[in-house]
Length: 403
Image (cartoon, rainbow, N blue to C red; front, side):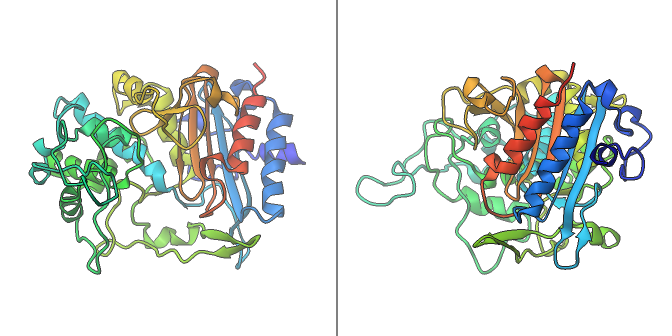
């Protein structure tokens, strides 16, 4: 029965398009995976739901360009007992960041900017930016000084910019231009290119650079350049009214019980399309994005990125700096990268690139195993990128490889 549930072939493959036959139909044999072990993944995810660790979970695996499994367990909404579906929409949070980096890299491919260009070349408000030598502290010898060099585009992508968000205000920014202009006035926390420090505002700045270089709103550019050619028809910053019933509820663990989190639905004109974490998407759409990356920048005959761009983005560029949220990780451009044996604890190969989101969404591509995996949940706390559900899924996926 469990195996039959996993091999639900046509009914539960909602949203898949005919343009990619190998990703449109489960073919465990072609994927070279063990059906019994794939069924074990289904049961393990169900266990997490039964124990109250997650309301619901969607998982998808593809190998060698073939769909191996697409599975949903639990509930999209606990209170109404709405079942989780394979086409449920999730707030993917920081899985938005690779999308923003892909947008930047399309401009590098076109020769319209360089990764070592200073941010001030495109955003003049960054000229004269200062550095606090004491980081976030104030006191003696903490007077602002000029950094040794200005922040460049690659710093933003690697989280080595030292940028921090502007002080909170009762009047939120009305545009990316306004938000980033405020951030430009904030002192840097360290010399650009030195420590690794996760910076959402750095990614918002990348979105603004896209707007300046292309003359298009950030969200329009990534739609036209990424979502449309990849046929990602369920990826949005603002979910259309007719699809809002498919959005999963977000939960927080409160003393061992899942409670619905107070998360507002973003609306155009009220909320910015955040380049750092604003997207909604589905397992299907994220699979297509990651298959494009696995396939060196192209999918179904449509090229989104050059192979050279993909190679650079998925290379660890942070040296020996402590980077990322899991052991053994370095940071590329948008993705974290397994850089040494410490990062192989989930059976990931060295060179695997991955990204996690704040609500326990996670994607990875293991090129050595020819494996793509995505797990989607909606919970605000409890383990982040090394949550039990994520660790179990990644290791069990590799363990299901047969040949």
